[in-house]
Image (cartoon, rainbow, N blue to C red; front, side, top):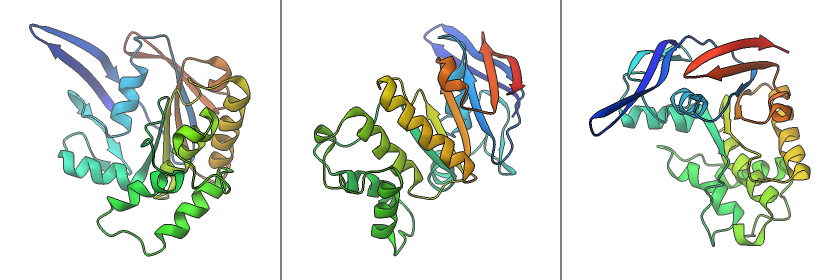
Length: 221
C-alpha cells in the first residue's frame, strides 16, 4: 500500500478515516493490527481484504493493482486469494456446518470436483469432524467460529484475514481459536489480524499500532 486514504461522505460532511497509509506485508507474515476504537484498523482491514476501494492511493496485492478494480474483479480476488473470519460468525441459520463451509465453492466459476472432500478436510482441520451435520444453533460459540475458519480455508487462500475473531468468545474458546491461527501461519499462510486485545495481538510476530487513521508504530516481536 502506498499513500492509501479513505474518506466517507455523509450528506454535506466528509470524514477521512485513513490519512495516508504506507504498508508492506510479505507472504507468510503473521501481522496483528491493534488500536483504539476509531483508529481506522477495521477500515484498513476492509481495504486489505478487497471489501472496499480506497479513495486515493495504490494497493498491490500479489503484484496486482486492485485499487481501481471493478466489484466483479474484486469479488474474484477475494474468492481466490483471501479467507475471512469476522467477530460475527455470518453463518446461515438452520443450515449444517457442512453446507455453510460449502458455500464459497458454490460461487466459484468452476466448482472443484473434490468439493465434498475439501469440506470434510476443512472441518476436520478445525476439530469439527463429528459436528458437520449440526446447524449453528446446535453449536457453541467456539464451534461456530471454527466453522467460519473452515469456510475461510475452503478455497485454499494464501491469506487469512480476521477482524476481532475472539470478540464474542470466552477465554477458553479464544485460546483454541488463536491456536488454529498460529498453526495456519506455521503451515505458510499469511495471517492479518485486527484486534483491540493485546493478548491476542501478541500471537503475531509483527504488531502494527494505529492511531487517528495513521500507523503509529510497526514493530517485529
